[in-house]
Structures are given as C-alpha cells and as structure tokens.
Picture 1 (cartoon, helix red, strand yellow):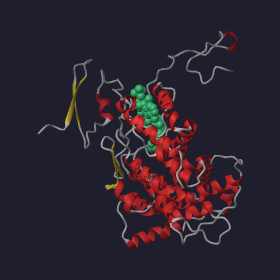
Picture 2 (spheres, helix red, strand yellow; picture 1 turned 30 degrees about the vertical axis):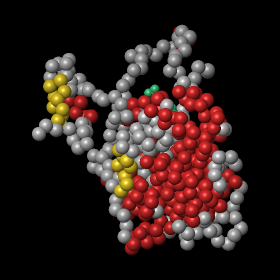
Picture 3 (cartoon, rainbow, N blue to C red; picture 1 turned 90 degrees about the horizontal axis):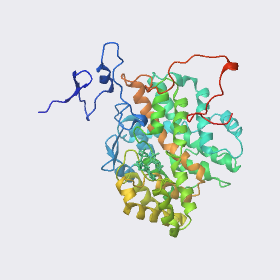
Picture 4 (cartoon, rainbow, N blue to C red; picture 1 turned 120 degrees about the horizontal axis):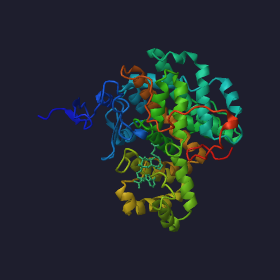
Length: 443
Ligand code: CMC
C-alpha cells in the first residue's frame, strides 16, 4: 500500500520534508512554508496566477470532470436534471443539498414567490440610470443597492437571515432583470404574477403588454427553464470566486452578489454569449467562416464561446443547449446564425489548432442563438446568466460562511518592484523615464 504522502528534498540545504496528500491528491500549500534555508526565512510559497492549479475551498455542491465532460449538482448528472427537473427544484437542490419532496417543494416555491416584489424606491433608483444603460450594469448597481434596503442581511452568521436573503435574492433577480429590460425599452414595469411558474412569471414581466394575463408559450418557458438549470452553478468559476472572496470579508450577501455580477459581466465569462452573437453577425455568412478561423489561429481573435478552463472535452451543457435550440426554432423560426455556428464548430473540431488545445464549444456558444430567437436583445444575455447563477452563488457563499477553515481571502504576491530608494525634492529630480508598466504614457 503506497503511503499517502509526498517527499520533498530542498537541494539548497539537502533537507527532506514529508507532506501528507489529502483526498483527491491535494497538498496544502502552507506546508511549503516549512521549507526554509534558516529559521528567519519566510519559507517557500507557491505561485499560481489565475489559480490554475490551486483549490481555494472544499465544496459539496458541484462536481466537474473536465476531461470526461461531466457536470453534476450535488451528485445528480446535469443531463438528468435538464430533462426531468425544473429550475426552482434544481435551485432547492443546490442550496439545500437534497431534492425536495412535494411538501418541501411547495413551501420553497411559496417562499421564493413571496419575495418577487421589490420596494417601490428600487424603481426610482433604477430610473436614475441613463436611457441606454446596459442592463447588466443596472443589475449590478441595483443588487448592490439592495443591501441598503435589507440591513438585517449583515447578520451573516444567523441561519434564518441567510435563508431569508437567499429567498429574497432568488425571488427578486427576475423582477430586477425584467425591470432593467423594460426601462431600456421605455416600457412600463410589469408586476410579478405568482400564478405563473418562476420562468413563466419572468417572461410575463418582460413581455406582457396590454393583455390582462400573459400566457407564456410552454415550449419557450420550458426552454428558458432548462437554460436556467444549466446555468445554476459551476463550482469555482470567476464570479463564484468573486462571491466567496468578497463574502469572506463578512460583508452582506447583496454586496457580495453585486461583485459576482460584476465578474460575470466580463466577456471572458458570462458576457461571452453576447460576444458570440456579435462575432457570428460579424462573420455574416457561412462562406466567411474560414476567414475567421484564420484570424483565430493567427492569434488576432478569440473564438468566443469556445474553450474552458476546466472542460477539455465537449461542455455537457453545450450539448443540451444545442438540442434545445431546435425545439425553440419550432416556435420562433430558425435563427440563421445557427448555420454559421454549426460551420464554425465543424471546422474547429477538425482543425489541429483547436484539437491540440482541446478547445470545444462551451455553454455560451449556442445559448445566445436561443435568446436572440426568443426576442431578447443581446445586452440581456449576461443578465439571463445571472438569474439562475444566483442560487449557485448563495449556496457557495453559505458554504463558505459555515466553513471553519475559511478566512478572509488574501493571496500572497511576489514583489518584483523597485528596491528601497529615497525621496528627493521635485526641483532636483531628473525628468522621469517612461516605464513599460505605466498605466498610461500621457500625463
Ligand atoms: N479561441 C482561440 N484560442 C483559444 C480560445 C479561444 N476561445 N480559448 C483558449 N485558446 C487558446 C489560448 O490562446 C491558449 O493557446 P496557447 O497555448 O497557444 O497560448 C490555449 O488555447 C489555452 O488557453 P488558455 O488561455 O490557457 O485557457 P484559459 O483556461 O486561461 O481560458 C477561457 C479559458 C474560457 C477564458 C478561454 O478559453 C476563452 O477566452 N474563451 C473565449 C471566451 C468564452 O467563451 N468564455 C466563456 C467561458 S464558459 C462560460 C463561463 O463559465 O463563463
């Protein structure tokens, strides 16, 4: 039986160290601090920009095997949840760890729906945004502002408070997202209709016009719900890391969620679905696909919606999204961009540049095509990602708050700046030299 440990020899001193290997092949980075040349030495540090090989927590929520293309929430395969569950039930699973029975599901649904309304002052707050404000910017600012409406959220170590903020956030996200959309269109707000499903109500708040009751198309309602299931959590991605990192300062969860939304907004993360559509529109036609592939291979462009830090195989979510696209087209008519996307995928999956780097379509490659077919403007795409991800963020945040090993997140750095130098009077200084690392070379 091999010993579950690693032996490290420091060639500077010849000393030998033995460190335990914990579950999943993990060595604690703090052990390296024991490796010193003399007692006053700081010890060794690990250097890992972008955390490509560093676990920041132990988590029971989401499992990904990137090589096999496997994604599971609390042990349940994403394919089964997408086929059989609905978003609210999946959110329960993610937040509470188990699937609910009928009684618990009904109570959960009631509790979430109790919190779909927002304070009237929030509407006034949102009216302060410029007429062309990006809805994701509005969402980020407004969620941050919610912390001022719920000062009780500061009680982060109180279980009841955490439960309440979780229901409030999951319940209010669709309302705020829809308000941002209506505002950008100059349309009046639509109040929540709690007779409808979570997703049906969201569609009503977005698209209801003069009819007395909005009736969502069942195919589109289900398609959006499936997309919500697929986006609900994805372990330690950029925005979840922001949620945990900001939350580790013990700030309230609204402020931490605003930070997570800001992280999600970026084009390399949740903003990628918007960028995919812009790229497909720029390509314009199937015949122009090879030209774009050429630009990508020369390093001039990124193929948006391709590649993933963890998946080195087809993203299992992308497979489901691609299938869902055709169900949506039955109702909306085909989005012509799908042909360009399919051709891009076909060429990329045969090309050595993509094959050797294990670059496959990710969840964002086809989702924007569905959203566009359903009538969403591109600027709403990242907002549609944020709505379901809220359940994942809150589950990850609560796990972090309860984890006795967690402390305020604070990475080390490797200082590579100037050595000590002394201040001289301004009149006697030489003209400053232009530095490569200056923020800007203009004054
Ligand atoms: N197009 C062209 N080349 C790429 C791409 C791409 N989309 N993604 C990675 N590469 C190349 C990259 O240039 C590098 O090449 P080389 O080894 O020659 O330097 C190699 O593949 C490895 O990539 P990396 O930059 O080390 O990968 P990463 O893990 O740091 O980045 C990523 C992951 C998702 C940020 C990146 O693949 C990317 O920018 N993709 C496009 C944006 C996108 O679709 N984002 C959505 C991610 S999925 C939804 C979510 O969770 O947000």
